[in-house]
Image 1 (cartoon, helix red, strand yellow):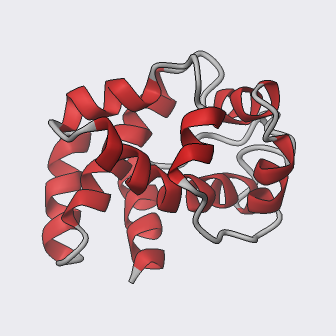
Image 2 (cartoon, helix red, strand yellow):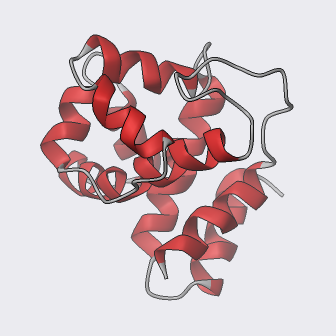
Length: 141
């Protein structure tokens, strides 16, 4: 079962958050394809002046970000456009979804020991995409 099949299944299971499921699936694919994995998101936010925000998320304060903060933090990575192309959604809808999802994903990776609070890999194997997707969507309900 591919990641997007898991996304469809999760969207059905967690009815009412289909857009979030699609954006989450696109985000997980982007993380898998980035050379630094989720650490590349930490680096991008730090380089774009929002390192403190990522530190808050890593520490468990997972309130949604503003879509403009997501755009600023991921600026130059191409992630928003890539997810928009992958899902068929507009970049605006993707930014709104990422504003909710990125804080949860960052906290998940840190709290489960996959990366340190500053985004450095710990050597732990990456989380299983399906389990991570279900965990993230479960927090949205």
